[in-house]
Image 1 (cartoon, rainbow over the protein chains, first blue to last red):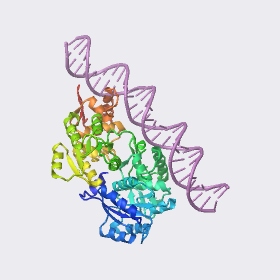
Image 2 (cartoon, each protein chain N blue to C red):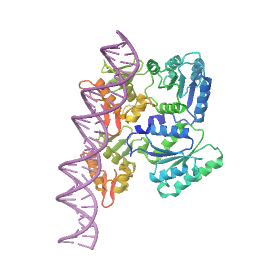
Image 3 (cartoon, rainbow over the protein chains, first blue to last red):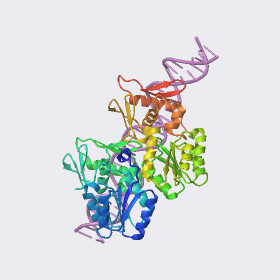
Image 4 (tube, helix red, strand yellow):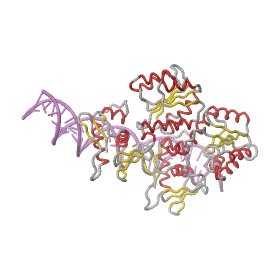
Length: 238
Length: 238
DNA sequence: CCGCGGCGTCACAATGCTGTCGCGAGTTTG
DNA sequence: CAAACTCGCGACAGCATTGTGACGCCGCGG
């Protein structure tokens, strides 16, 4: 949490870029976020969004899946490709519920996603969650902790050169851990960070996935990098 | 619903009292601070805030200028008047920009003051600043006393570079001590601070945990940093 | 329609923490 | 000097937390 604070002790408000083709929703969100003290810039057009993002790099992008001009997913990709915007958090909005959309959305680098219809409050909460998460690992850069390397682009994890076989959840969990090595996360924080803010999951489920992750990354003669902190949570470290 | 997913009451977390009459903002802030690891209690009502503050003295109060019931400024005054809450830092929120309001706010004893609209991030930053000033360890900063260092983020304690193996209670006890080096705490104070105000524990139990902590941090050629003050309590010092 | 892989929950086992006791060595009180 | 206190210490039964294997569900791909 402290890494977040020291990141940019800016006095000005956090800058939000809002991309949404529904005029009514756009205006509503713009109003609400402005009311919350955010510095909001809004547009219904994907192309224009790219321009705005280039002109003034936002702290967070809220992006509709389907927008005029360049599609949301394409905007997402391009933002990730540009060095200056590569690590800017993105929250995707989508009307679709198809699972592969979610996967693709997260794949292209979105940090979170919300299915319409959603309550503004929920969106605000997720914005809060994302803002809180400044990732030391810039999207697209492989992260290395100890003898484990994670390549977010290739979606691949290797240990000592050998590729590890991880399930989707295990991958996200590991990635979340590796972005903040050594830091202890409570089960609740893990649930928020890995499963998403709105999920209603048993706390103990985290334990099970920790175990699965441990099993997936275990190697002979290698120490378990996941440290259990009794009555506090788990931490990942070399 | 989210409350159900709370980890068990963290005695070690900083306690925040949030008083804000706008439900949306209240919820947003509550959520964000909870995710920062704070132990948050929130209410839209000034009178209720007084009760909550009296029941369980918070480490910091975030107070809206205008709230239901007793006004924010009045709450502020009363908190200052009560001995138990007199020194608790207060951050005021207000929509007004009039200079005299600000003066009055600081006059009544608020430590800091933010004008709406503000970015949550800015508020978090200020809270962080205040917490660092009051209780560094609760703000996520490593604390060092003598040759012992405690890192609250990693949940780790080292002495002369070597990592110490502490149980949950030992950790909390040590952390509590290290926040106020040299100060003597009675068993009752330790019980309140480490176990929580409501706990119904034998006083002698503290002795046992002191012993366990001593054993856990002992090293050859190193002085025991815990000083027994006969018929008074214990103190931690270099 | 069926099999498969992944996921969330459970129940149970395995640790290892915890709060109390009791005893004994010092210390203070009278 | 004995009684009264205070504190260190080892033991322990109970309990809280975590590890683990199994099970059923669900969406996807034959």
